[in-house]
Image 1 (cartoon, rainbow, N blue to C red):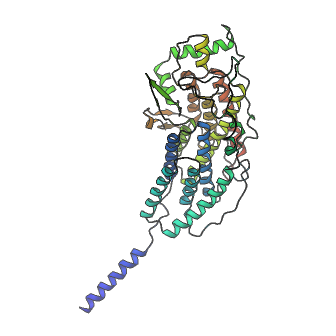
Image 2 (image 1 turned 120 degrees about the vertical axis):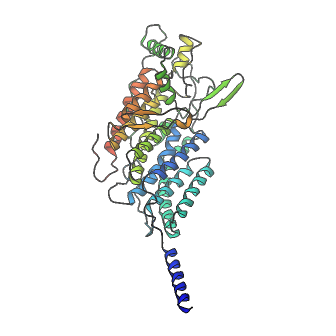
Image 3 (image 1 turned 180 degrees about the vertical axis):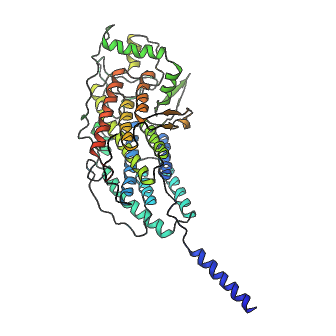
Length: 446
């Protein structure tokens, strides 16, 4: 009987011993899937809160930079963006002994991202669900707390940086004033909204020296004379829309990305919320990272660099939009060619030249090509959530070309806005990858 009791006691001690052993949590987060999920949630909130495309690019950028800066601390092969981005001062961080860097990166992402949106509770719910899953899967409390401490340190530094970009001040700048100039942009149906973000060129860029660094050639000289260059550009939009093929129509809708679309049926008006152009390309960046099977640090780099390209792309584009303040095809065609004509897509509420899709798509494409190479095949499923099918591309540059020409198919841009916008975006992307180095060993420009 005594021997049985001794064996029972020994078994109890063994059970207690093994139950006290920590689970191996080192592989809980290996790739970028958790950051992609956080980004997807941020996208949902951007749609929910109806942020404009330029503002959305800012919301993506700062949390992505914060997550990347934590990834830099996890090894010696990546290089901080501090001291490389305009006004981003260097800082030292106290790294706790028990830190789990992938969690610290996500903590930084959540904190910065939550500060930039309205619906904070939606982001907090997502964060808490993620934290709970980590604890269930064996992440010790001491590691959890240490990781949050580092994440918040980095987040606070990035938040302080974000507050110096002139965004808060720009919220009180005067609205755009309409003019009687016949070539000037006018609000378009059905909502006739005022011009959005007329002072976006006052926001500090991340890499450009000034907003007009990649200034485009002026738009074609305005004319209502039949046969003039400008009239022919409008006719091209008019005839393209009237003779649109199914493939061209599919391309137009796939790249619509208009968060302001308002549907009118009789006396009823209702909004249709959509992803922004920047949100589409951040989605592509996540898809590409998954396709390349990047680890969590490389994924953080991909998202950060893409977001920087998009952010500066909107500044460069909006600088030109409110300098040329060019009339939209819908307004011109209805007045001088056919008053019944309608574009395929709803015209967004800001001037025509240059095309925002053309600029930011090419800036993002050049950046992703630098990171992942040309000839990178990917399946773009970003729009599936909005009822559209997938599209496949053999390179980021080909995807950018399609995004750009989609604006002609949609009837909302003349060709020069597409051509010169694409040139601007490519130049910006090339400049970004030359100026900013995210690796200690320089990545060769592809």
